[in-house]
Amino acid sequence: MIPRVDNQAGPGDCTAVLSQRIRAEYLEMPGLCLTIEQAQRLWSIDRPTCDAAFDTLTATRFLDRTPYGSFVLRATRVCQE
Image (cartoon, rainbow, N blue to C red; front, side, top):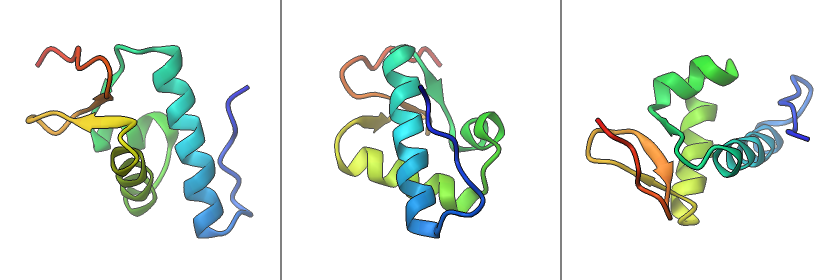
């Protein structure tokens, strides 16, 4: 089950829940390749929250950022741009 981002959660809680959700999506679809803008639209989230979640996932080496600015699962790097 993918956690939902709750409007009543605090800023840190929201980022943690969102990071879990993004992690689950990338594990379910290892070829997923998204820009920040695409992720914002997909999960209906604001830019600062999205940036914080993706910063966490790249810092923990779960995701990599391609030279074109897309985020991919670290182990795969399958994005064709």
